[in-house]
Amino acid sequence: MANKQHIKIFSHNDLDGFGAPVLLKTLQPYLFKNATFDLTTCSAGNLDRELSYWFRQPSLHQYTDVFIADMTPDSDYSFQQLEQHFPNHWLIFDHHESEEKLRQKYRQNCITPTNTDINPSATSLVWDWVSQNVNFSNIPSKRQNDLHYLVELIRAYDTWDWKNDPNMDSATRLAADELNQLFWFYPLSRSEMFVTEVFGTSWEQYRQNNSLLINTLNGRRQRYLDKHLKSVLTFELDGHSFGIVYASDYKSEIAHALLKNHPVDAALVIDNRSISLRSNGKLDVASFSEKYFNGGGHSDSAGGTLEFNPVETGEQAVIDALKHQFEINKKLEKQEKEESSSTFADNLDPEIAAKLASLFNNN
View 1 (cartoon, rainbow, N blue to C red):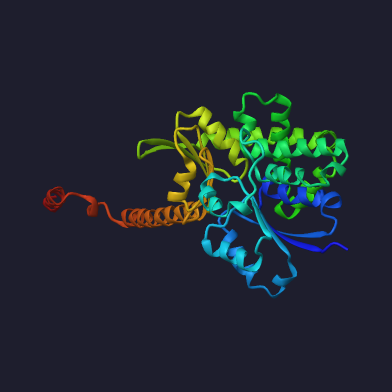
View 2 (cartoon, rainbow, N blue to C red):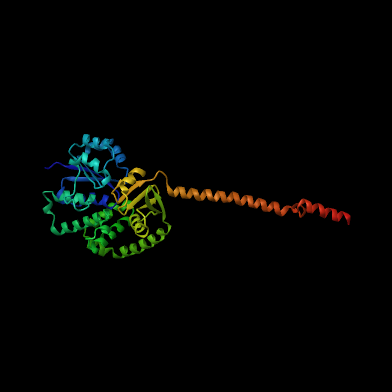
């Protein structure tokens, strides 16, 4: 009997981050019959913390392999721990340019695309890797085609090729957009379930079964974009122009519309302590985000974190303004009371009052 594999997966919590591990689980009956997968997802910038915590767990010895998707550790310590605990049994499926130098140091453990002319995503890197499996041909042709198309939709959206690739057909552009919309419609607790359901069928069938929801989301998004794009602020910094807006949903779409509607080099979309950046090619937002927001990503698409919460800052500004106005109102009320209680003589000029008093005394 073949040795059992217990594979731990760490991945990002966006569509591509879920797509990569769900693809592995979907292909488990064909390619990994003796393997089980355990998934942990996390937000950008938190991978090293999750790894550090996991390396200290008593259950660590139960795992045979570690896969990391759509993220790369930022510290050499994490890589050293991977080498120490899982020598030759860990892989990274990541495509973000800001961590490329780190991956080069451990390139034997980092999966690269089979076609370097196509912008990869984590899910497409997993597809490239499993395609080389000796048992890949056991997957029925139709199943291969359906899965490959879903992989392409995720890749197209994650790399923004659905907007930037002039050779991409309109049907694929639309499908990539709709799949991503559906993903963000569901709460994070249901993300893996949603992606699993989609990978369990074809996009054509899933789209047909959910056409009403998709059409409703399209209308909702347009209203959301129209509303939030009215509050864009622009500014200049270090020879570059920026547009900034607050939005908790549809961040990529809002950033793209901001770049289209305003003559700026980069769009910044803020939400709580996170910030999403998009560029029109005039600014490397991956380097910019790494420098100012402890983040990273791609040259035209990146993310980071803020040292303050703009929502709380805005709420505090309202509180401060309210208290300030309250003090002004108190002073005005006090002044009005004083004025209403004073006599006619109190309000007269002293010289006029003296003349009036002299006049009445003479009479």
